[in-house]
Image (cartoon, rainbow, N blue to C red):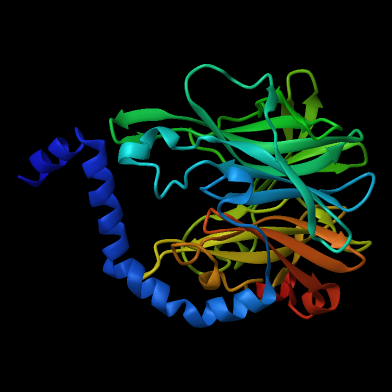
Length: 365
């Protein structure tokens, strides 16, 4: 009976939308989770600053997960995902709005306030076959250009009310110097088989070489060997000591969040995340800081606790706080976050504060 009713509702997108939204809104788990997060939200709201929220420059679904680089002229450049409709709402009558949107560029001044923002409409070389979404735009400099590592998501229509996907493909693109055009460079080719769903590869230019960090545990790093074909070859494949492989003890994968940046003369800083699944929160993204030795590229220190209380994230569901990039500005580290898959925020943490969190990897064994 339930199966037949579900099949019937799928034929009527408007009815499906009403049933779906009502079910989510009234879900006991969501309501309890949102109540439990109130103390954490109060602390997080005091600590963080909103750069963009739903409705900014017409993106009703919000803008989230910003990559960041220091601008050549002044301030910072952010590149984020703007969405016409939040995935929460992109079902039923609004199903065809799933993943519809554009990359969005922000210019920030030295005080980290946005002075301008615009959608990037010129997507040169991007696929025009079928429906494809793009997300998780991180940025880094390579050969004096701004390169962008991001995901491509081929979409499949499951039925009249739902679009979905079965694969994600990491990509490399270039943000042109006018910040008006994103040029697709291709899909990185690795020297081993990859999975159907791949995300969160990160990159670093080191001594003129481009390095790709494929996985955190084991730590697998590759080097660009063929620029034309974007071929990478493995240079590090190293098992990490306890507890880095399960840093929060949640039994889920530990994945990269940010591209590495310089921390001090001996270390690089990156952020990793691990998802906690609990009775009242489906996905709580916990973020840890990691210091890599500049020479070996192996972890030498990690933060004794998560950098942020992700339970306090903005958005309709508790726990979705994703650190997409970090910038060092005069020993103040600015973490740029996506919250609730709808907001861009920033949190500033001094180097002094971070130095108090580090635990040596050797002490953890």
